[in-house]
Length: 306
DNA sequence: AACCCCAGCAACCGCAAGCAT
DNA sequence: TATGCTTGCGGTTGCTGGGGT
Image (cartoon, rainbow, N blue to C red; front, top):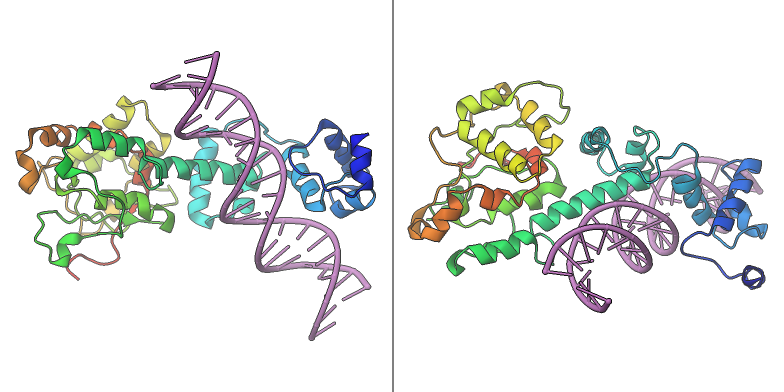
């Protein structure tokens, strides 16, 4: 009755779909196929726009959809790879994932991005990291807010003792997370020097193990992987990261300083015991990071000396 | 129990491409 | 060729339920 009244007044319905509406839409598709969406309204079958009808069909009513199923690890990996390959072409990516819609993929990716952003305090709301950093670090060493990239700051003639950190992102949307490293005070500055050109191959086709990596920098690999697993954050992506790490493809810029700690208190900060405590314990910092940010490390645009 | 925060999801909006007239 | 309509896509928003305090 309500529906009849609204129909006669040409009121456009919006919002969640009712079961009856779904049935009408299914009937239409069964009779005419998934097209002529606008005619559904013009015939007075539903007070929905053609766009709305199409969307409902594509996202919810189409056969063989995996509605309500979380993405499997395999699907997640595929989305990550395909996104790296195609960018935000969700419809295209979805064609590689049976039963998934572009909306599914888009939502998955957006959730993932939000998670990363929050963890890396790029969002306006204070993140866990922000809060814990404020609590755990002395006021002198508050982690600064995100700024423009400070890659390879040693090349900028600063007197800072900050070591060169050649990290950037392989995709624009990961610049911010990786910049997190760059905004750290000296005392937190990871001593990762000059990751090489092909640090991570997006195709995931090489099988070079972390062993080679460990040979050069035992501490790096071990501390990272143990951090994630011990925090229950073990991420298959990190395995991929390790497995695809092809040391043979690293350029000669790469320096893994042997014997260096992953975190080394530098300069004035080293005199603070509480800072040192944090610095000496990688988990106090990295436990807040999602493992997969390390997928997106790439070399700086040019060598620091340039 | 009430409140808050957050993640996940469904749906809307604007834009662009394709097509018919 | 110009115009209007339809369809498809990507970005964004708003709702809801779960978990934590």
